[in-house]
Amino acid sequence: MLVLTRKKGEKIQVGQHIVITVLSNEADQIKLGIQAPREIPIYREEVYNKIRNKNRESIMTSTHVLENLFNIYGKQAEEEMVD
Amino acid sequence: MELLNQEFSGDSGASILAEDDQKAGDVYTFSYGLPGFESLTKFIVRDVAGFTPFKILHAHHDPTVAFLMIEHKKILPPDIADQLSEALQKSNPTLMSNTSVCVYSVLQYNRGTKGFTANLRAPIVVDESSKSGRQIILDQQALPMNYALNRK
Image 1 (cartoon, rainbow over the protein chains, first blue to last red):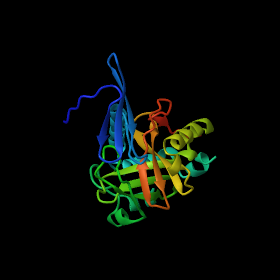
Image 2: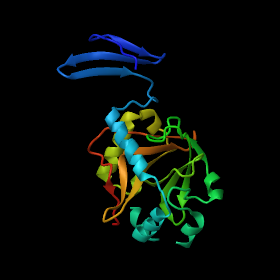
Image 3: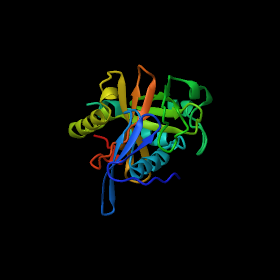
Image 4: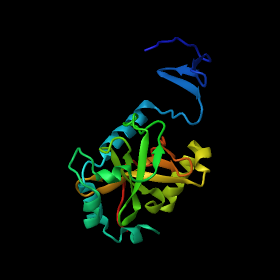
C-alpha cells in the first residue's frame, strides 16, 4: 500500500482524471472530496461490500429458484404484478 | 413447469441454463463487472418463459453465474418507485435520461416465509442502445436490500 501524508486542502492525483482532496480532519473523521469522471463508480467500502455479499447470495444455484417462482406466483403472476 | 424444465437444467453449482441457451440473447458489456463478480464483464439478459416481468441475467463466459431479476416498475408502489427513480437520476443523470434504459432489481429466493426479495439499493441498469449495463449502488438506507416481493 502506498502511504502519503497530506494536510487539509492538499490533493492526491490518481492517474490523469481523478483528484482526491483532503477537505477536513476533525476528531477521528477525515472528509475527502473526490473529483472523477462520472462513469467511474466510487463507493464507501462497507456499502460496496454489502452489495457484493448480497450479489453472491442472490446467485441462482439451481432450478429450484425457478420452480419456487412458478409455485409462488403461478402463471397469473404477470397479470397480478402489472398494475 | 414443463417449459421451465426444458429450458433450465442442472444441479447446484452447475449451470442452470441449457447449453444452447447460454449463448442466446444480446450480449451486454458491464465494464466494471458486478460487485463480487468484477472479472465478468459480458452478460446476457433472457426472458423467463411464461413470466414476462422476470428476467435472467447470466454471465456470458461463466454459466454458473446467473441472477433472477424483475423490472422494478412492475413491483414497487409508486412512492418507492419514485424514490428509486430520483436516486438513480441524481447519481447518473446522463445515463437515466436515455430512453433505451431498463432498470431491474436482483431477486433472491429466501427459504421460509419470505419468498422472493428484491434488492432495491443496487439496481441493474441496462442500456439497450449501447448494449451496456452496470449495477448502480444507491447509498440510501431508505431503499431496502430485501424488499419482499409479495403477491397482490
